[in-house]
View 1 (cartoon, helix red, strand yellow):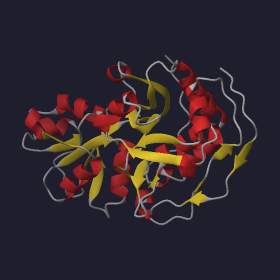
View 2 (cartoon, helix red, strand yellow):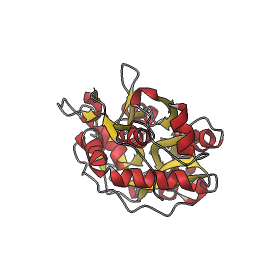
View 3 (cartoon, rainbow, N blue to C red):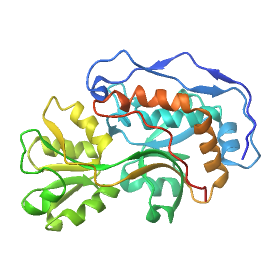
Length: 295
């Protein structure tokens, strides 16, 4: 599907990344994405409605270094945030006209169905259960689940060690794919501790309430980078987690617009990665994955 757009005008401001997300100081910043001056869309489409409104609400995480993290000034930054800005900019929405809405894993579908956000870009794994309620554009990135432990923990060297250490507690997030997938590696359901946010899991690991944290490796690498050597990753990734952009179920036109926008802005996509999650040691610059069919 083709969409008519006028020339894009790049804004001049830049967004600084937190040292925590980068695992140290860096001069790299993410340039603000281009913003369409007066885009035109077919009447009645989501794109037309957002463009005419001049603002949009985007759901993301506020507690994940490198992807979606609220800084001390109250701004959110990270790869998901920059990807969302690219899409918003193609509809003529400048970064200052975006309202960022915190969307923990357990409420993402609720917020989309309830119209509280226009889309969700929040390390959102595409799966069939979620597709019963919402539609996905993408995937725009593929991660993999892994385990994080304290640096002095040699008993847990991967997910299989959780079953052989039945007293060990592992933490994940309510409503997340990693929380479901780790269950098959446990000796007992009592080993699993759930919170609303991964930052709560990291805090619990730090104070000894849990022995391990599990989620996608790129998220965990962010926590490792800001832990001052207290945390480490163990074992290999044991799943594939394709991240999608959550939108209203059945909005094929919006899905196809998102796909076309990302394809036309691959350089901005790479820049977004390298100035956010790509600053974390151990990450690799991704290629834009092949998109699934919109439905």
